[in-house]
Length: 175
Ligand SMILES: [Cu+2]
Image 1: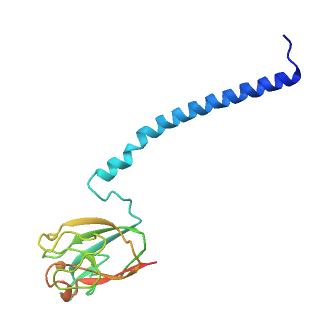
Image 2 (image 1 turned 180 degrees about the horizontal axis):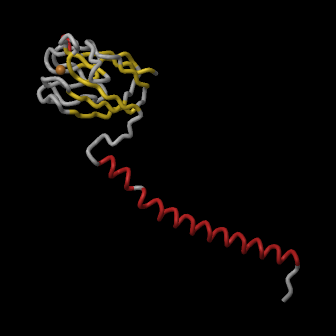
Image 3 (image 1 turned 135 degrees about the horizontal axis):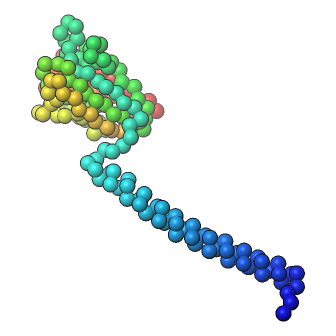
């Protein structure tokens, strides 16, 4: 049997398509194999105790006393001010705040809509320790949270009556 030029061309195309289909199936199978070990990883990370987000902003905040003995916060241990420095982040930032207590009494941290002497509302799940179990002197602890919505907020030490003594500052989330 002899094949015409057109038949040969047709046969070539059929073989080429079959080859490409086969290649495609192999690629899909390989893709599934490659994807499988990768897929469970984020689920494991997310299940590992909550906020395993990668921070886009990292802030170290020192809780302590000003040179004249007032309670306050600072970005460095020798720059404690009362009230504390303004914290600026962008909307959607994954913010990691590390609170270091260099004072002689326990403190805590929370972003709040309004500064209150006792029991402030906490925004963004941002609290570091609690008023009843605050951070002991010499200790440090971190929180990671998403600054979800733009606005002019505050941060404060939620331990009873520390905020009125200067343990607060502005927390600004720009849009
Ligand atoms: Cu305090």
